[in-house]
Length: 223
Image (cartoon, rainbow, N blue to C red; front, top):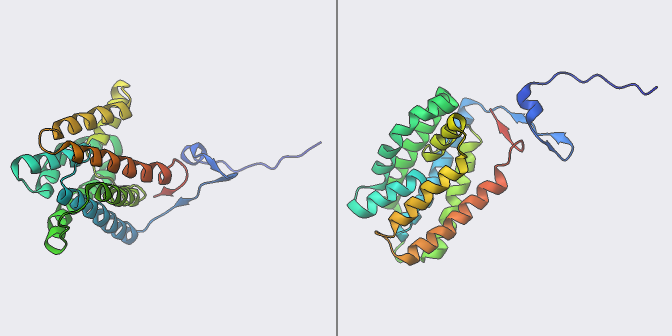
């Protein structure tokens, strides 16, 4: 008779993680120092990509897109608008993800807001080609977002509300996020050129490709 070795019990979280190449994805614990450095590095990447977008007259989705619209329409600095627009979303962050996640998200948003005000004082891209800028900026924002995700942080915004609405009412988070992004793009038609809109869409594709390829469930678990 074949004998089977008794396996140790695992937590529900680890049991739910998908297998990769026949092995379970490792759960990697980060120190506070690692989390701090990662949040600074991630927000530097994101804010630099946003600076490229701003100097090329481009837009993006979610609350960052709203901040760009305010900037182009009223002259309000992107960093100020981005910080203020995100304030109402922290309540949903606490409800959906807890205080630890909400605090890290608040710090991330504050740093992106601050860095986006600082970068233009040191770096200027006069006459930046919009399509090249959209792709490169999108890759930077996507890479920075991955760094933040892997250290239990985010850039707040509509995605948190979308997840909350999905949990509460069953409306798919992706559809709500898409509806908001479409509204931002349509609103942008009143303040930027159609060519800038097209370049921004290409940049959004680059951004989401980075996230889709590098942020898969079970591949990397940061604690």
